[in-house]
Length: 119
Image (cartoon, rainbow, N blue to C red):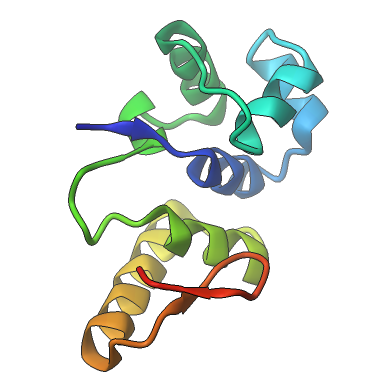
């Protein structure tokens, strides 16, 4: 089952080089809504997900995680926090690399705050 992923929204916003007001304007919403969604304090309705995705130039599914254990939102948080804006291909590649490191070592993956947690 697909679940909205705030970290992916942040990643795609960073890819576009936008701040929250820029995304809010492009998606015809307000900054407070974008901030609430990006921080995980609220989940957007399907219509808003579609609007955000259209503004960001990605499919709505790109803003979701799945039940696949390898599709971990923590990887997106690390990528968003540690790196400058990247292409979607670069982000996907880094996610694969991080999953392989975790699989090979069993070490927890650091999250955006630097805390270690299981992937």
